[in-house]
Length: 584
Image (cartoon, rainbow, N blue to C red):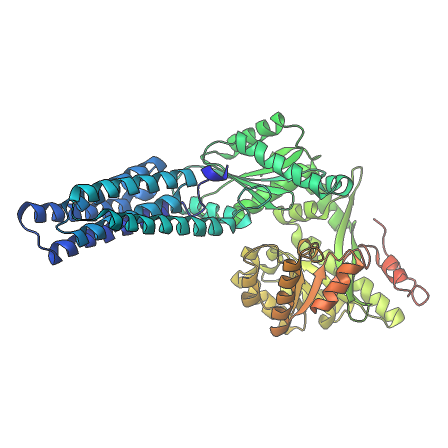
């Protein structure tokens, strides 16, 4: 329930720092009152003692509170209430009493900032009662004046809670009320920042057949399934676990205190108790020194292994998939991973100016393997370099042959993994392949699709600079899928921005999304970048994209990924060229 939910900012680090600052302010207020008011003897000693106590509490909280259990913070806050109330009673005059009583506003701020609405309101009521009683005992403050102070405190508490809810909403998924990707990343960083030796495991959960639910029963049914997953798993997970909706039908999970095998047993148990929610799950245990991105990449690899093994399974990263890897390596060596091409259309002229090369693997005896699965497998088992070379050589060779026989040329987009970019020899291998096939660098677009971590490493950026110096065009792929994507525009050398299909899907139904896309296009234009909209599926989307200033479109509206011969036939070039391409 939202009333019982702890705000996103309630981390031990933030709580310790804030409470320590409030104790320091309280101590300074006590010293200034003692200095400026007419205090003598026991009264002065008492006020100085309270100030010293506040300073001591600040030191203790700042030094040790980051490792405290949550209940210990209640002790620190309740102690502050007592100190303030005693100081109000000891105040030498009405003005001093009101100043000290105003410190209760700090208690209200902390209550609403770091605890649920119920707990925060309890602190508000407690602070008001304590301040009123203390002012009554002190005797110099009139009741209307005390009530005016309390009105200010209540208003401060209301505003604080409103701001907290607004800030928390940026880190929560409105459909499931779980953390969103931003909230998950923040929680991960907090856990890694503790620096303790306790085990930590991460997991990615993916709904099997979710697209079929949306297609056959509608998006309302799909939303219901997502909420069912959130409710079922939230009720099953141990205290301290972090569950988030990572995007689409994928959920992310953090399990502090659990090793990989323990985490695997837990998720298998939850899946077994909820068979109606068919999920594939990948689990990985954090390795000391590993970044958050590296941990979740390994969980992602385990997820793809679970899907490749038949879906509806839970797998631990590093599981046994030797046959699948062996089959993929053999397919790459034999050229049995085929290249399909998807058209990229210029919106203003309705003409196809380029294609994106996409790898397709039909595993013998099994059937088509989803690209995201075998590409992740290739990255994990050091096959991505050979796979990338094969795709680039095959794609440029086919397009060069088309140009030699027809005089018609299509600009080629090819995905590149961050792991390839971090290989010092990658730019030279690309240059050699282009020289071998006779394909011009200026008609080659390398699309950076790997994680931000790899894509922004020093080696990767250096490789991109070298490739651009050779005349190759660089595109930032899947733009709009993460909150940190804007940083890529500043750090990555690029010429093209490809807006992710999940972003385009709602532009005709969401005016805010359409306006945001207009801003993105304007930003890209100002930076000298071309914009390609991915996932265009309707003429209505295409017309709106053209109106918003988007230059190019890619998606099923213009054609599905297909062998080059079929793409050329769809363009009406079949009379000019008989293009042959291997059939998967």
